[in-house]
Structure formats: structure tokens, C-alpha cells
Length: 236
Image (cartoon, rainbow, N blue to C red; front, side, top):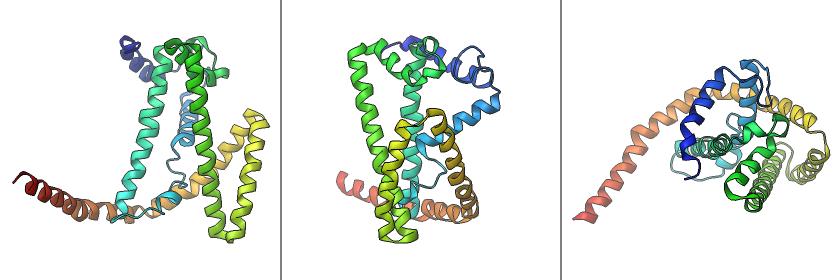
């Protein structure tokens, strides 16, 4: 295992600097704790889309015996994306000290530098390039699908076709536009999506609780009993 001896210190850095941020390191030098949390939450939402309501467009097209089943898949995907993938990336950067050698204004290069420290520059560059291409391409497909389905629901099939061209134009604009302006615009658009969705979640919390309780009392128990019956027949 590479740099396994540095893992305990990584946990210390994460928890210590979460509440007493280092003023000399990172992209938020001298920022208050509230500002750091604000940026962390915003970037986290870009990663897992929790609370945005967009993933429900895909989940709603799935077929399950109980709605709570698909809900748990939604929870699972957030866990994999944030707790596993993002945490592994953070551990890689912290264990190789890439965060100390690269400034916050070049934070996008930290992952590549950390991988280069472990795998070498050539292999690291290939891994990062392929990963960025796959992540970017799948994100474009996802956003296009979301845009099409929302436009189709609101304005009909013709609007879904127009939505494709809007997405293509947005991709081009994002590629040539100022990074600071793009992030600021995305933050505003994110708030416009999250706020009404969170209000809706609060209003529907009773139904969510009802469905979850029903799942564990009935569906989950029945499924467990069916599995037990199959196991009993197998071992007889």
C-alpha cells in the first residue's frame, strides 16, 4: 500500500483544519469557517447532486416493487460518489503532500501531481486524462437527458430537441468562458434548483416516512422471508 503510514495524519488534517483552517494553504486562505463550509457544500452538490432533484428523472423511469427500493439506490449512489470516490481522491492528495506543493489557484492539478508521485508522470497523466474524459462525457450525456426530459414534460417533444442544442451551446460557452464567471453562474443556478426542491422535500417528508416505514414493515420483511425459504430448501 502506498503511503499507508500517512493515513493517520490525514484524518488529523481533515478534522483539525475543518474547524481551524490554515491561513497559508488552500484556495480559501484566511476565509471564515462559514465560507469554507459554503464552498464545500456547493462543490459537494456538483459531485453528487444530493438535494437538487435531477437524479429523480432517472430513478423515476426504473421499475421496482416498492418506491423505497429505488430511494435506497439513490442514497447508495451518493455514498459511492462522495464517501468513496471523493474521499479516496482526498486521501491521495493529502498522503502525497500535493496540497502543500500546489497552490489553491491550481487545485485542479493536485490529483495529477499526487498520482505522479505514486505511479509516475506518464501513467498518472494517462489515468487522469481518461478519467476526466469518461467523467466529462457521461456528465454531458446525463445533463442532456435531464434537459430533454424536463423540456419534453413542460413543452412537448419539439422542445426536447431544442434542449439538445441549448446543452451543446452551454458546453461550448463553459469551455471558453472565464472559470470564475462559470463557477459563479453555476452557483446561482444551483441555488435556483436546490431551494424549491428542498421546500418540496419538506412538504413530502410525511409521504417519504410513510413509504420507508411500510417498506421495512412489509416489503423488506417479506423479501427476507423469501430468501430464508430459498436457503432452507437449499440446505435440506
